[in-house]
Length: 151
Ligand SMILES: CC(C)(COP(=O)(O)OP(=O)(O)OC[C@H]1O[C@@H](n2cnc3c(N)ncnc32)[C@H](O)[C@@H]1OP(=O)(O)O)[C@@H](O)C(=O)NCCC(=O)NCCS
Image: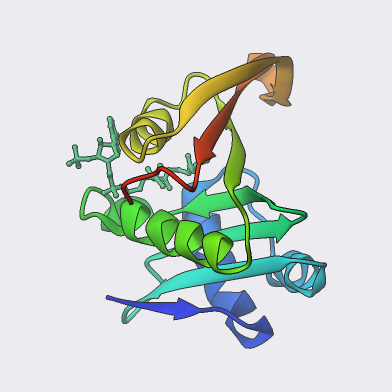
């Protein structure tokens, strides 16, 4: 596995990884649009098939994780941590001192990953996610101080 700082040509790879990880995936055009936005950047875990993607935005001293996805067959090998560590380093490199993200409060894997990286619970957005027939789910807002993080 190799981490690649992504450009628009990697949008199909990003969409492929995302489609395997989410019920409502973002397509390549959506990734291209996000990447063209101010402060946006992404990393792809490249293998024979795409093994993951993280997409972020950093501006005004703050960074935000827009999405993180690792396909089921590539999980529990440290790819999520590697993608997030690259994203955190890139945020620091452009002067961000804090990183935020939102995550479904019931997403045990993702919350575990973020807490392992030093993120703490900073807030709750009630009924933030639409789960279709399964109703709505709360989002946890998580925060990491990039100046003191060990990763
Ligand atoms: C969350 C996700 C990105 C994790 O990717 P990953 O490559 O498997 O993560 P890692 O292998 O780097 O795991 C790092 C740590 O996270 C935690 N973790 C990961 N998956 C977990 C699980 N299923 N249950 C509990 N903890 C988990 C563990 O602490 C793990 O360390 P360990 O394997 O040494 O126990 C992946 O499960 C995924 O894509 N899920 C669907 C999409 C999603 O939820 N994205 C995040 C939305 S905010």
